[in-house]
Image 1 (cartoon, rainbow, N blue to C red):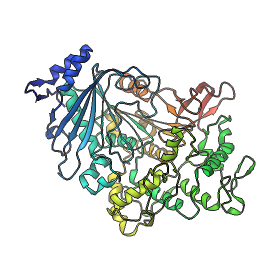
Image 2 (spheres, one colour; image 1 turned 90 degrees about the horizontal axis):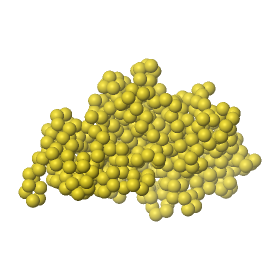
Image 3 (spheres, helix red, strand yellow; image 1 turned 60 degrees about the vertical axis):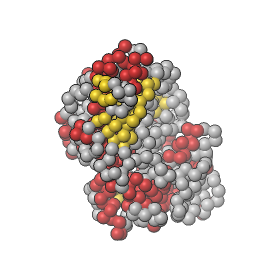
Image 4 (cartoon, rainbow, N blue to C red; image 1 turned 90 degrees about the vertical axis):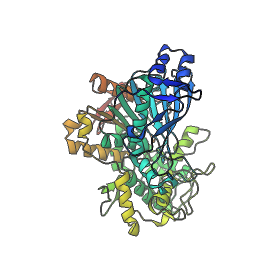
Length: 569
């Protein structure tokens, strides 16, 4: 993309060239930077400069944000730029974006992915997901950061946007390209030169978006971080539906007290499988093989309620055990769905925090919300959240997807649609999987471009299955050959870490620093270390490249990564 010099008329009628005015920001004087920022308001990006069809973009507001020195959100002063990318269909919502232009720019840009159904601007001024709490945020490092709401605004029904086809395509992936091109145009115009290096980072839906940009536009980014990526999003939605229907069966939903009992049973059976009892299950695959909730014990008594009936919160009934086994198992597609997926993995379940009594812990309340919530799925599906009560996140997500993506009928009973036998809805489901499943395994074009990819996933994720990410990475290695894949891809698993947040092991890792060294200096990621900020604040573990996991060496402080080694057996 050529260097551009944005020209526009301010409210005072003064014509300004941003490439020149922006030079004021380099002085570090807030008043000059603020003037430069205000002059961006009203700037436009022509449709011809955006790689997919739009009616161009407009900056709708700017505000200079002074420097902040309070950790962890420590950053320099920057220009906050808000704007709209106009849709082709006048009935479609605009893509609302935010771009942050630091006063002292490092010459690099960082696009941030969203989460869930999106609908709100990506968190472009925060630390990265699972980012290091002892370092400045990306703006503080000098990055121009940006992201969007993926082309719709949050509503009471967060998936309602899918009734509009352009909005649906924007959410699936098109907004990524439109936002990237718009931001890069504005960055070049503001600083007078293009970003020399371009990065992307995101988790969950943002992780899927991270994989989407390298599969569909492999030359756009030099380095990408994909955390707990919901890569095969529509196939995962079908798994959500299978789980939701299982939990909705009479007596099948385990409340938070029962899930705490199940968690403790898993910990007591599996914690020591990594060589030490330390409150973390690191050898989760072995735990999955050996743990049987129907035969397990907790605190010396049977986990299964006597006779299989529900006799209280100290045990699980047969109906609840059956539901948890559905949660732990794969959904198999016969025939394969339109994207080619033949199954979607089940969840690590045993010894995993799927939501326990939170007390006064806001962090645990978030864990509960993102997992199995506090009330069973039902028809009509209760809003999620509904005050202090919420259905499993999977159930709310499935309900919205069925109503607005599949049937386009807001009154449809999502519990009546069997994802394994969808009947007349199979054709539509196949269309959606082709649109939403980001499952290309030949990433050669990205590798040839010199791109580098870091993927990480918490072993205790109850919203996006860790085993699905394992499956995708295994398929990439098989398609490309492991030696070639290792030249640009690393995949790490984090013991005890849930989906974006955890009270067991809340991850803090300098993924961006590792990626910068690989992209910019050719230094392959060596032994990586992840820190805990919640369960045992300050403890560390080695980040082991899959399929390795951290085993205690038999000596040394159990709270130090140096006391563990990555093993494969």
